[in-house]
Image 1: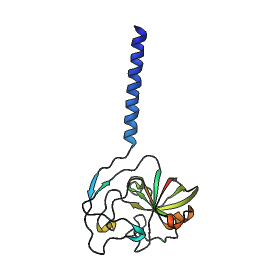
Image 2 (image 1 turned 90 degrees about the horizontal axis):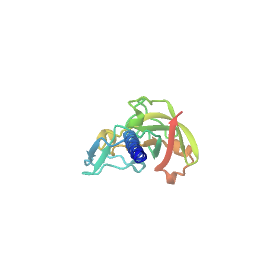
Image 3 (image 1 turned 180 degrees about the vertical axis):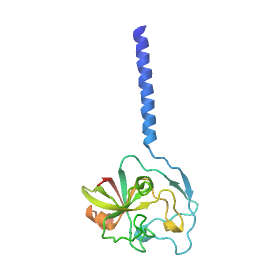
Image 4 (image 1 turned 45 degrees about the vertical axis):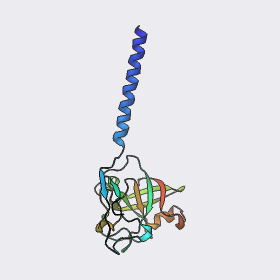
Length: 186
């Protein structure tokens, strides 16, 4: 009887441990905070430079105040130049940046209220690595408005990079768009 009871106690403890571990893993994930409904942009106002997506009227877009705890990300392409698809000046230094300079914008959670402004990160992808300076936020909390060039909110796992970053990673320009990467503080 004692061995049967001990076996049941062990099973219950294993089950409870699994629940606690599962809860901890779920707490580390980043869930959307709500949804944003796209509105139609005024004629000629949406910025489709570099094939940027524009919000679609009535479509639902997830917004996030967080980013994943690991630093696996999707690299996207952005122009930080005046008139580029990034919209206005970079948030960190209130300047535009040449597409020949390795600069990035990070999703809201990773940008962390400007805490990552101007230091550099190391990006690894396509079998290479490059160091790029963080100059802007890829806003995961807002979008579909004039300030965001009528583009959807940024996903929560984006490193939005200049052409110089893509070139340094050795990705042919016809393949620029999205690339699975990892990144770390430099």
